[in-house]
Amino acid sequence: MPGVDAAAFAEAMLLPPAVSLKINRRKLSDVDEAGYGELEQVAWCRSGYYLDERPNFTLNPLLHAGAFYVQDASSMVYEEMVRSLAEQGALPRRAAVLDLCAAPGGKSTSIINALDDESFLLANEFVPQRATILKENLLKWGFPNIMVTNSPTSRIASLGESFHLVAVDAPCSGEGMMRKDPKAVEQWSPALVRQCAALQRDILADAVGLLLPGGFLIYSTCTFNRLEDEDQLLWLRDEMGLEILDPLPAGDFNILGSVVPEVKALRFMPHVTRGEGLFVALLRKPGELPSDRDPKLPTRIRSTAKVILDGIPQTIMKGKVEIPASESVLATDFDPASYPIAEVDRETALRYLRHEAITLSGNMPRGYVVISYGGHPLGLVKNIGNRANNLYPAAWRIRQQVDF
Image 1 (cartoon, rainbow, N blue to C red):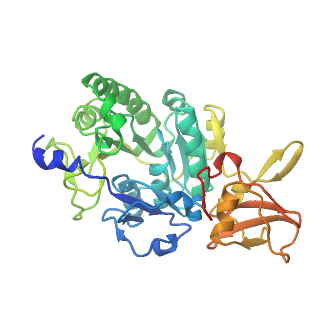
Image 2: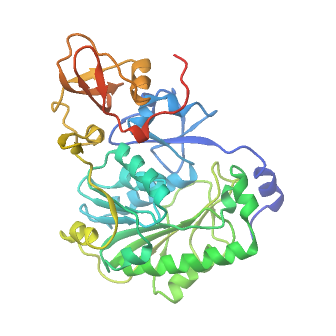
């Protein structure tokens, strides 16, 4: 590739990956609140920070409260790209946004960090197991105006022109993941590259059809080859009629650009940028962007796709009885006056997250009580006096052994 120091690149691919996290802007005002002290900020994301080493994130209750998300720094660029569009007024306050290949949720949470509270996000994932993980991560992040679907992109495409912004983090050959995932090395072949490129075009064709006139498309892969990267942008420009834009406003982010002079894009290369391999570009569909979303959009989604999350649930059925949903307290618009709150220490919080029964102080009233750690709700219990029945979702429980 022109402009790429092959020797430095090969050497960097043998180094350990950087460790980074992103704070939830609606739950934390400063990274210090995450419990890891002062951290170095990611240059291209004001919510992203590097850690010198990888701690045991699972044993930090704030991770489960959705206060932060462990994510590769390169992928955090989504937040700054969407924020830039919003700050320029290119996206309306009540924007309809679609993350078409969303699992496990890192880019969806980045998008949410940049959106106005009145915006709406649909996150779709085709693979059922990955869709389940996506649902959990977005419930913990707590953005209320959310839907999660588990459908092929062709099914979503039947919604037609509906979204101001569509993000496609496409399935790819995974070359950018090779230094932290041995499977990416084992599965790679020229045939895989061609197969991924063909699938990407099918998905991108669906994405373009879902964009409102004047809407924006973010396209990314975690791979390096031109076939899955710049060539796809040229196809989107020449065959689909999209305009290729600058992905970020001017700034010294130490990120390489496209290897094709006529194409604007960002290439996160590990010998230059502190993060894993990522290619990302911003495009725009011709036309004038509507200033509001279709109020019937959620209804149309329900009748079109397989919906596995429709907003943050407030109640669930336990047998024939309707009870409060533990997930409801994770919402960023949760009213703390709804239930009594029990602020607990780390050991009690971890026991709760392991789905164990816990005991609350004697002055705590009976009934439904919010378990909180560091001022952040984790979930609900039903306090019956001598113990509190744990209502934390069993599928979310920490399975890792904890030495108290």
